[in-house]
Length: 74
Image (cartoon, rainbow, N blue to C red):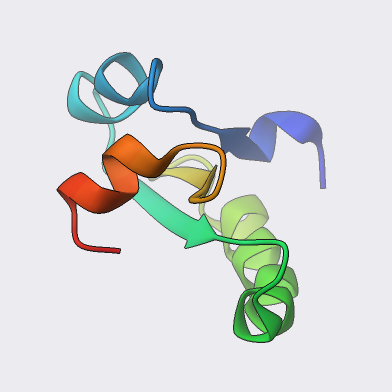
């Protein structure tokens, strides 16, 4: 998997990378302390690589970016 297959999003880049994207965006909200996130990450990375031409796959750390997480009820 290349770095470009999975985008790291922050509160400050949410609008540009998600709301204004020309492709659908699938976002994985995660926390480093979350065992479910850790278990799901390899699958998310595989999907990002497989479907990179159809959609943008992105991750957002909810601890570092609380504003967007709260806005969407995560």
